[in-house]
Length: 136
Image (cartoon, rainbow, N blue to C red; front, side, top):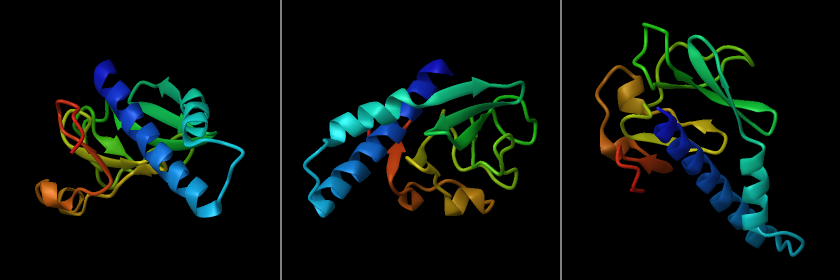
C-alpha cells in the first residue's frame, strides 16, 4: 500500500503544480515559480495512520482518507473528509489499487461508481492513474 500512497501523493502534487502554473500565468506573478510552490506544498503533506483509515493532510486541511479497516468499504478506497477526524461514509471516490481521479483539494466524485454503478473510464476527469501508475 505504501507504493500506491506515494503514487497518490504524486498525483495530488502534480494537480497542485498544474493549478499553480495556471494561476501564475493568469495573474502575471513574477515572484515565484510553480516548481517552488509545488515543492512547498509537497513538504506540507502529512500522512497519519489510524486503526481504520489513513488520513492525508495538506496545508493544515484534511485532503481525504484511505480505508484500511472499515468493512463497509474495500481496502484502499478513497473517501472524502466529513470532518477533521472522520471520512464521509456515503460512497468511495475511487481506490488506490485501481483507477481514480483526484485534485489537490481532494478526491473527485466518480459519478458511475459512487452512485452504485461500475467504474467507467470515460467518467474519470482530472488526474487519473491506472494501477501501473502511468498517467492517462
